[in-house]
Length: 168
Image 1: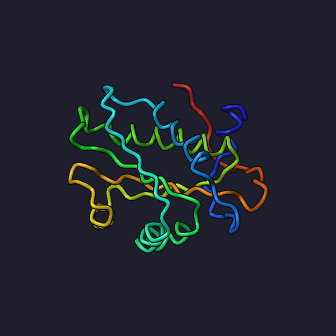
Image 2: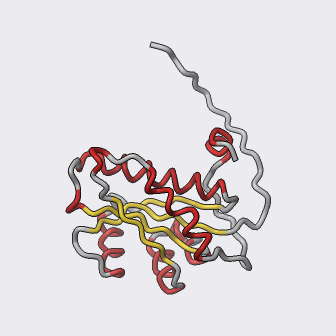
């Protein structure tokens, strides 16, 4: 898939196959792409965890009403950052967003589906995740990516936006 086609056709999908699951090899194929995202002042504070145990997926699915699809995903990427490594704290959100977008585009390139759900800066949710996974205080959960095998063909999306680019 070409880059521009991937950008135009990628979207969050909450529809999944009940019978097919991704393998650890398929997981590794796409997750490595977070490494290629830029990092402000090369702070490299990002840390990603792969969640595969059903009890852990169930826990995450119960945290927020919009996360009910998480327990049915093949696996989840729990995107975090290490605040003890921050050289430029004001830029960690941009670092995380760039890394997550890389993973989402890699997932789309392989014809898997994903949805990105937030955690940061919801303190109550962050604290519950940190406690459950026994993270040290310096590891801060930022977002969750639920990934699965599609159960139907990805249909083209037709964006209808009322804006234009203005040259200043």
